[in-house]
Length: 104
Image 1 (tube, rainbow, N blue to C red):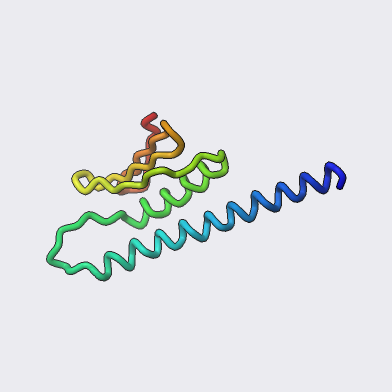
Image 2 (image 1 turned 180 degrees about the vertical axis):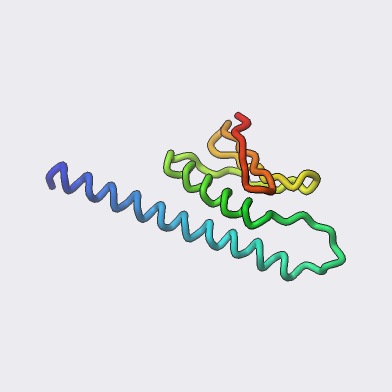
């Protein structure tokens, strides 16, 4: 095979990995909604806003394009903020309005 073919195969492999990841994140976001629908209304449980869900999806896609694994996604029930740990030390905080900041 020529170098051009190898490059094309790598690009296809990367695209397939990104496509698989995108599908998985979509399933996770759908499950958030499904889980919340199953909970009783008497429970006071914090759920992410639609802005947070969208921003979380976008940021997770960015991290994986950099080949960083998403290790933890956690909703702080006290503040309503989402924390994402990508790789070993990249922490993002997503506020309920969808804005985010890089913590470190």
